[in-house]
Image (cartoon, rainbow over all chains, first blue to last red; front, side, top):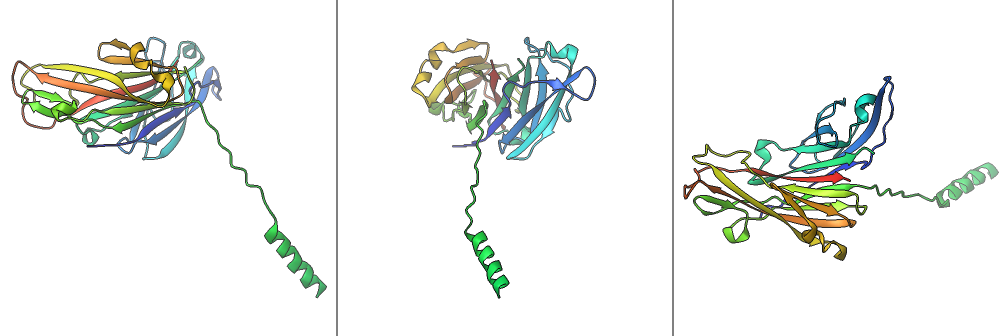
Length: 113
Length: 164
């Protein structure tokens, strides 16, 4: 039996935005923890309540993370877009060579309240 | 001599001085998705791939850990295409079902009955804090009695934890 215990975690669950150094742009900080040995990349996305993408800025939209690595990253969203932004999500990106038979892609979404 | 004794006494005093070392823990509200078992397709018939144990496969098992009740939804989507495969010679029919395999709390016993299924996705409302294990029974059947071409077949199960 092929077993691969590994976990994906993102906090906080309900991020709070604050003013950034750029006028009319808000920011929040998220934390990602990669305990999946089969995953080295995570994609960050921001969506509205209908799951349509919302423009945002962060250092890397696809982040390379080593196994057991923790990353803290800032998300910047314009005030106008923040009103409709609902979810901040991180999704594991599986490399073709790492998928054996049935791979599991994990996605965790925090909610902006 | 007095100075030497005083220094020695102070060193001894330092050595026996007790210090409180605080250990701080912070349990954050969070959801953790753990891949406990990555499934394996069995090939019971030339035209069928299945994760069912009876078909020689291994069911994928995903665990969701939530630290606060009623704040998350679990969504599990079974594959409807191969992420990689040899060139296919016919259309493939996909089936998939997700079920609660194990729970850490008796209060989660209603999860299976309350699940919502649409398209290839099954949604669970995680109303109790703790761990829930989900397994997925997947199968892919090639066109009418037509054998799958030889090669390696991979598919992706998507497990999502969404804050409510």
